[in-house]
Length: 591
Image (cartoon, rainbow, N blue to C red):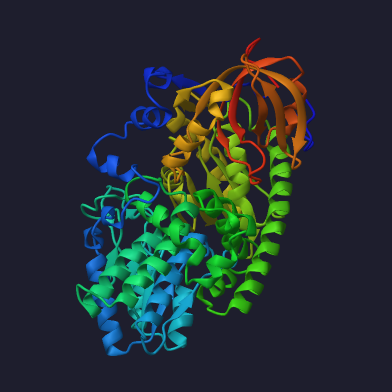
């Protein structure tokens, strides 16, 4: 089948294995309760966390419960008291940028002198992490102390280099730590390290900006006492929380426990945050709405912050978050919007080329467990986005590599349940450096290592996947008719459950026996279906990135769909259902 993006392949609907338990089919309880029960979110704490869209800040864990937060805060207090020249060493993604902004804006609020500076590595030229060359540069600029955010946790050699230079080093990070071949954790030699993987941290899956927020809270308490002035309490709510909320969504942290608290609270103040740059990134349509949801961060703010580092330099995004000038912020936000538009075009082009290469090499076939490709023309800044699209499409880990002056720069994504970082760890001998998480990781290698790496990546992918590529599970939260799925009661229940994100996605609602009336293409790659159910209720389904399957939805054909209704951006129009998967009633249909 020839698709609208110029490739041929075979995909079978449904793309997921649907699972519908007794709770999903129990019409005696409402949608809200079905979601909570079906996802196993019982207990008193979850009852409080899901009672409202904005759980109280009291439900956040004590910042001192993060292992090392007190130690890092005490080191920062000493540096400030001694008047040391401090640098905040961050990362080029939205999480690293927001974490850097939290500490720099805190130092301003505390009137720290001399004023600390920020250092963000270039995504392509330097790559991720703490680098000895960067430490040399900071030392040459008379910096005396460095605190990292979103990196440094596995920088064993770089920490030793800092020590040789006479630089004091404190580390805050949330990426995987380093373990030796015997499985023993190895920590960098530094003044202090705060990391959720250490000790008995009550909730581990938090982003770097959340780690920075906790350190910031402890530093405020150390310097200003247990009851800091109102202005500092306002700073936490109006600046630190919105920045941490943006980072939590951008870094795809699970929307559970205290992440739900910080995102709910951050969204509540985002329109009025005193971080002028964040306000300038909110689209006008969202500003006009009564409230914001996490999708504004995930689809509007975060991509714009990330676009700077992907196409140029992430310092542009950081400058926006540090500026208090309305005019400058407006101009910088417009620049990021331009970069984001270019990033979208570049990503679509890369996905198309990479997909064609994968199909031509049969990397998408059922007997393969991974996709690994390298191309010197690919921009390393958007490899992860393209890898994510291919991983979702072909349901397997994907590693893509582009060229830099020093060798291949790679970025990968993997489906739920696959540990990409573990796979790269098993292939560590091919990399000069690597890091990341289970679902997203990357690294660098010399040009002559790729051909040896690719079969090993396939080997260790196969070991993890055991039975080969399997359809991922799709857990049904509720079974409703199409008409009732879009009624006001259902929409209110869905709205009451937000914010949604990784680990707590929009409800998966199964709607049976829908009939195709008409089809259309939406925004180039989306498929818009006009359907009706058995009761005669009519409306739209939106099936993003599936325009190439329009020919399957012939008028009169019946199918079941799993999706979630979303309100229209225009309040005069009814909600439409955004589809995750479909199942034709006449057959499981190869496309």
